[in-house]
Length: 412
Ligand SMILES: *Cc1c(COP(=O)(O)O)cnc(C)c1O
Image 1: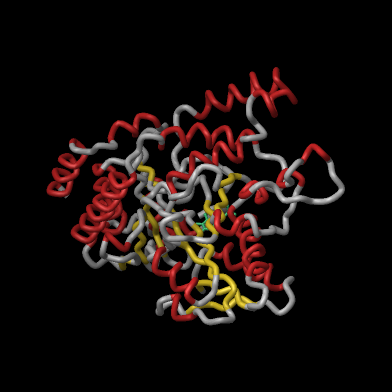
Image 2: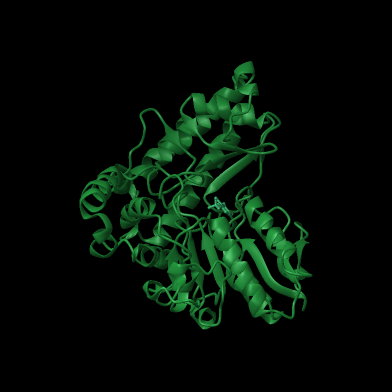
């Protein structure tokens, strides 16, 4: 480990993003490698929440919808996310969950391609994406979900029955990065639309929705964007399409003039029609505060740091864990890999529980994946090496082999 620690020290001394760590609360003794499930809390959030509750809510009351900009939060927060995903101002709104936004976008896409029957999906995508697609297909006449084979390029499954292709830009288990430009172009060439799930991409690497001519995108904000538990998700629709879209959850706040209380629905301007009901003000305030940290982050720098960290971690694990039943479950080539590193291990759940008890917090994904995410805004290279050293200890000494770790917790 000495060699890796020395290397980590050198990289940390040279890290252009190192100053950002102090903007986050890092619990004592913890190496937090779960930024892909719930990111660390930025230190500015509690004061912002207190201000929202005390000044805006308790004093301002209903006046705050206008005076404190509550009503505009879905758009103001969307505009903070836009530069992270290659969208322009006024092209992103924030509200509801990723699952709900998937439903809205898939339904809008089906309507735009009403002569086609198929939602094309990845068999092993994050389950909610496929559950939502199935639920929607089930209530849409003869629409069906078709699953692309996992060992073939998804574009091979496109044909003229496909209305919309839904897939993750970075896969939640394998960390594989899809070629957004090429897949989008292939879908368009087949006459289909594309919906990208950016949950593991925003805040990880530069995304260029505009440049790739993407139709729809959604993603969550509680992972690498540090929006906090239950933080609302975002929705993007290409400006080329949005004026023609209709989404089925046509709530009053997506109406062009909500306070006219008109009997008929008229969709709001552009992306605003994807808003449904009342904005989640407290969650949006926390997210808005978190996103301020991104204003000066150079995304290519961020990506470089993440690639180096995951590379260092994999090298340190493989050098110290030998053949202990661990199998790398992400691409070895950093260019094709997102910010998390997964290994399969036959006792993966217990291994992760033992690690968590030792302050190395990652997560477990059934059936056998242990997953470590490297959020470059707040982690150090030394953290990566410490995590590898603890993993080696847990495996060498079989610290996972303890009956306490056999019982599954509610959240893994
Ligand atoms: C985390 C995640 C979600 C989250 O969905 P919610 O409805 O916001 O809970 C959706 N899709 C992917 C790929 C994810 O990683």
